[in-house]
Length: 168
Length: 132
Image (tube, rainbow over all chains, first blue to last red; front, side, top):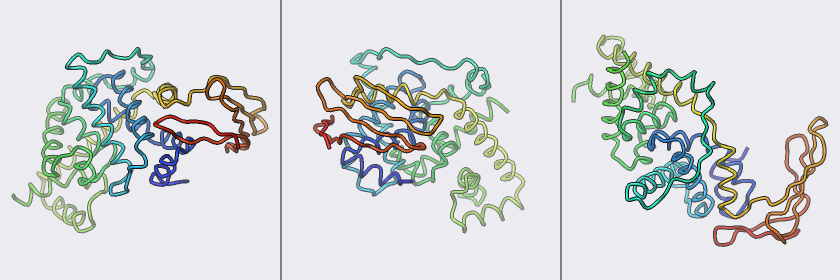
């Protein structure tokens, strides 16, 4: 199996098979991270789409100074910020969406947990997501979020306290 | 910063196994003798489980977004023909990426794609096709 770094190098040479392999490996990760930030299914799909297009176009700029996952999620965060900014300014209309959550899947999610997570700020949600779902190191989470490590720690602390207050 | 505060800051990465061995040992030793930090640890474990379970149940969107990415990147299939049988472990596929572009063909053998005609290179964020 090729490493992410090898796939990015191949994508930089316009290798479509490598692009599809990288997409399959990271699409769910990018979507879930985007959802923790934009909190809107169709918008998170758009973030995934724009992120992967950016990866296709910019793979030859990947220098390997960070992990591929960190680099890709960093792009996703920038794309999410950009889409939210444009939406706020009324510069973009949401794309027609085919977003359909599977009712059987949705029914499985504890509604209280879902609501409690959604009540957190985007900053708190994305910190929880990167550290507990992606299991990123402190340094990698700080790199994706573009904030000091101390800020990651404090966001995580307040996020889990808020969740515990709501659910325990 | 007290020792308890330092340890509590490390707990998220303690439960995900991302600490150095020195920090892991420090946390393990501290929580054995500190009830308050042990309770904090239980809370961190619960939050991790809650977040992971909720995220794992999100709907899969991979396939439909991939189709949109293909279109935007400029290599949408305009025709696609498959013959063969998955039952015997192979599939022959041929497709043209754009009207007028050369046909590419590949053979899928036991789960691996083997290209037999066609190659591609990227230009200005899109693709063009060259026959092999």
